[in-house]
Image 1 (cartoon, rainbow, N blue to C red):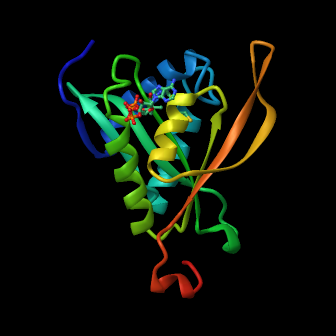
Image 2 (cartoon, rainbow, N blue to C red):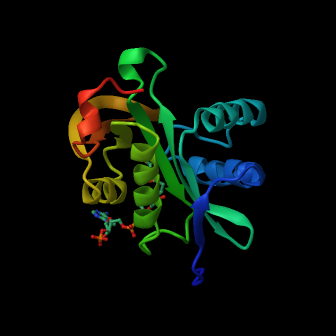
Length: 178
Ligand SMILES: CC(C)(COP(=O)(O)OP(=O)(O)OC[C@H]1O[C@@H](n2cnc3c(N)ncnc32)[C@H](O)[C@@H]1OP(=O)(O)O)[C@@H](O)C(=O)NCCC(=O)NCCS
């Protein structure tokens, strides 16, 4: 089990391949993400580039030059009425979990999300992922519903839980979000 403290920092372009591989490791566990393997190179590159150009926050936990965790926001939709909504995704490599690293990672990402103008952060989590749900509740996410049988993995259906966090009320909320 690694004992060292990883570095929490914004994603940089040179993290791309290490991040993609980390997503692959967690995906192949087949328990947590909607990917089941490493995201395809070109699609992943295009997705990250689009998010980066839009200014969507993405943080990583790095250790010894490699990404060991990530948390990011992706705009839900470009339609004007939905532009204030961002979808959160995160993960830590096995061995880096259950040590409290998830909390600063998600807190930094949420704070950056409000900073860039998002007013609602939402996510989908498998209902059996109690550790992730505990972390999301801890930072203020509330359950908004359950989609029954939403994940189908190896022929087994799993419910998902939809959760969301609204930005703290500010004077700026009285105007239309950017
Ligand atoms: C989910 C994840 C990001 C959480 O980060 P973490 O650093 O491991 O979690 P933390 O150490 O911050 O602990 C989260 C909380 O969940 C609690 N918890 C852990 N296992 C739990 C369980 N089975 N049931 C209920 N609560 C649990 C912990 O006690 C902790 O609360 P506390 O700080 O009040 O004690 C990380 O475990 C992970 O990447 N998991 C695999 C990938 C994944 O699930 N990604 C999210 C997909 S939606």
